[in-house]
Image (cartoon, helix red, strand yellow):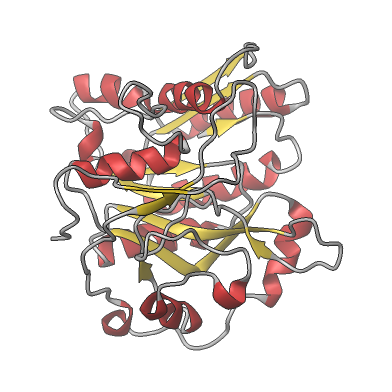
Length: 314
């Protein structure tokens, strides 16, 4: 996990994390957090959280760093570095004889315990390599309408980006039908605020890391999360799933709005939920972030190949 100036959501986030840890058991988890550059109360709250983790016997690494993003840097190169800081304990734990099956990587999201447990369950049930929720904000509207947030990263089986509107969130018709029925659906890529990753490609011999696009090879300058999806595909980890029943947001005021989106229909049977995997799209849509010291990507679209060894899903 990475955090930066998140004092509003941290108390709720940490409370729910402890509930997740209680359910999973301290012997089954390792918590890693890399915070840097916060000038609010984040550092203090997180230092107290580490004390709690130590008392509970939960193995952990909590790094509180003063460094901030330097000028004249590429946003994705910087984000890749801080995300890699958060997964560094995988190596040290492995050297101590402990390897993990799954990585739960979270942004500064507001969630409930069962959201994370559902993602973990679906990752097992679907035998998926990447398992995501849906994340939301209100966009630029002032009428409390919620919109899908992570459109830069999420790609459907047409290779198209997710739409902000929930009425047409994906262009791939079979996926849209499953979305309407609140069923998990297969995608080319997702992150959406929190993700359960198959840990295997992060160990030898693959040793995946977050990265910026390869400029020398003219690779589209996408998000580090998009590139992680592509690297999963390249290395044969191609079962990627979005779980629409899990809804996350980034502000407490938006979290309350999600109540209207939760469907109280009976939970579908595991058989109905089960995804029949199909092959991926030949190309995906990419919007590049090229300039230094820039947060937003450009509007121009290029369609690119994302794997050199086909799109077969096994």
